[in-house]
Amino acid sequence: MPRNQPRIAPVWLMGLSNATIGLVGGFIVLPLPQMLAAQGVHELKIAAVSAACLSPGFWVFLLGPLLDVRFSRRAYAALFAALAGLCMTFAVLLHSHLLLLEIGLMIAYAASVLSSNALGGWLAGVVPDVAAAEGDEPNHEGARLSAWTQVGLFLGNGLMAGLAAEGLRQLRLALIAPLLGILVILPAAIFPWIPMPPLASPASRNNTLHQLRNGFKNLLLELRALLKRREVLLTLLLFTAPTGSFALTNQLCGVAPDFHASNAFVGRMGGAVLSLAGALGALLLPPLSRRIKALPLYLLIGTVGSLFTLVLLLLPRSPATFAIAFLGENVVQALSFTAAVAICFAAIGRSNPLAATQFSLLTSATVLPILYMGVLDGRTYSSHGLRGMYLFDGGLSLAACIAMAVILWAFRQRPSPSLQAT
Image (cartoon, rainbow, N blue to C red):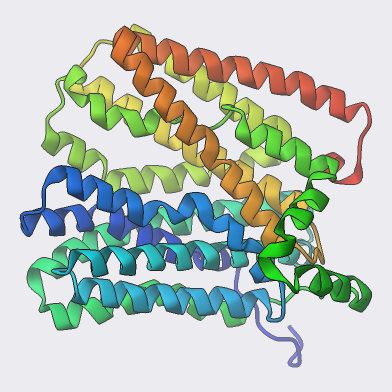
């Protein structure tokens, strides 16, 4: 490497810089309920607080346009990572004040999502440079980078769940609170070694700045402009259909008694084992992407996952079956979302002035089917039991994959450059 050429991080390390969102989410999912239960907070209140703290994952995409103006996406990713860490420290220190704890963690999670969205828009422009340096194709490198961003999320989730739980038991609050905050910020230390892609042309950037100058007033105009792009429209349709949501993963813990699985067994499955399974699932994408293009691969993953759900109908209701179902659904969900992020990278492309806005919009679309399928699965379970829920979830997802395959084939009859890339 020439002396005047700056050193850049390997792809796996670039991806691990996305761990901030996993670290904050990991605290909310496991240590937070344990901490509140130790304070005598009622279970229903704990569930409400946890849901409120995680709610920015659904609505924070509305702030996406702010990540594409004035400062670089690197600056925004670092700024919001720092804010997430500070709010984490604040929340843990004031854990006995329930309202302040809730506000602090909600802001921390919102900041971590914004940091991840800024990073996603930034990394989409880095993919061509990484591919050129590796002598590879952008699609392959985009899949590899996507996989490692999800590994960072899952490992961050598991790391925080373990360290925070132990730290809160073993260390003084004044010590563990800033340590957890520093841990949340730590992935941003990788940012200086991630290359900055070329900016859009001055005319394009000035136009974008003009559109975004009034912030939220022009949000609908920006979204309308994005929705006029065929590849964005197809991707939104693909993500909002129940082709890769695997919302059953969120229902299985609630129906664990049907499998005669104890709370202790469910807890063990939902900790480090789940994080490791998710990370391994994400790493399956790069080798698969070398054989199948991104959009067909996404549908293939959805099809295989749907068939897996239907096969569960044949298995006995035992703790072993619960473990198979829980880990299998989570692995396929991790692989599906990793493929979705790779599709986002390809759709955004290089020098996109609305990269972070588009990344926020597309990734938030993947949350929608998890929400509505979760509600529908729950109602189906109430009326038709476990077998009915399996049949409904797997059958509807399989039908959605077939329908989207037909739509994808129709789109390919009139190909655009971005669709050919995916």
